[in-house]
Image: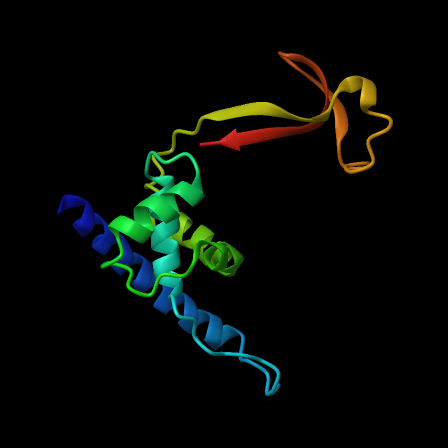
Length: 160
């Protein structure tokens, strides 16, 4: 019963956020009078999709497919009565990518205390001996050195 209340609480917060997001989106970006524009609501709301994605990342499941098929579709069928199939849900995930990131930034991040931790790590694109034949990230990736040695790729800096 405790988990169900967490699902309901998460959904209520996500639903309030989605209503505010849609209101701001409609106020700042009026839709054109184009007859090809489709504004029909889907079977599953954005708040439900955001809730499922947040639950996945706060759970111990390793793969989203297992989480969705074996946990959401079986255990949470009553909480989400209009569930989509797994393939349809995955196809609709990019639609909630921006609202999900804003939701995580606004609703789930803690208050800044003034203490910041900074770390960096390397993201190698390929092995060093293949750096001249790499065409995917040509012009973007560079050669660099970290405590682990030389690499060809990117360096990620993270401040928490």
